Image (cartoon, rainbow, N blue to C red):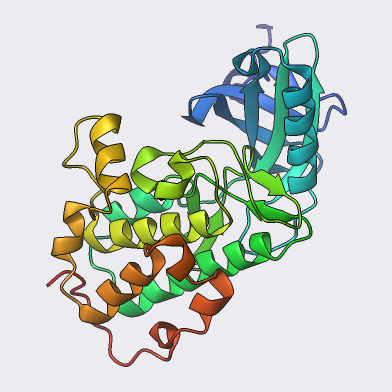
Length: 296
């Protein structure tokens, strides 16, 4: 009698590259995304039977500064306590001393990030655009009114995620957010240059830097163009941003209501509304019609 062949399910099974200290989460080898200091891997929650994201920060990138590393760890732990339907859920946080990494497990959205989702679906109504925008602002309002106040600092369309089947938007990549005290003022520079408010470059800013970044996200949602894409260096972006020169993409926004709302968001710091103020703006009053032309 011939020997029994290996079950096909065994041959197809993927091995875990790493398992968390509790044994609940297993990391696969394939990357979902990566940034300057962080990599995001596909992973599996064995307890719930769902796919999750394994975020891994190499602490060597922080020059082994124990004060900075401990602050980063405590801030990511705080972020794991956040409960808002427009913020990516963080399930677990731990530090791997042997590999010198900070790891945290977050939920995965089924349609990827907003940038790719928008480019995939080119015909989008103003009504849908406003729904997405309102959800982002709801998430920001939750962060900014949290005690302590939390500033995202790196909001852009690549770290806003979509559950496309229900039209739900979620803010992610909060691992390097700033947790600030009652003064609501932070003093370190981090972010994506095309989305950074001018005062971020001066390293003296409040939570309204996120409103500026949101305005640039809305501009990208409308035009499908990354702001300041006409610039070929960070130095040129810096010069335009600090000089108060708007990105070229603003010229493509011919819908006056949308353009005026973006202008509110990217105004000078003292004139910039809060997320709470923007949520009350007439921009979000009931939309009539289903126009699909956003730029002309």
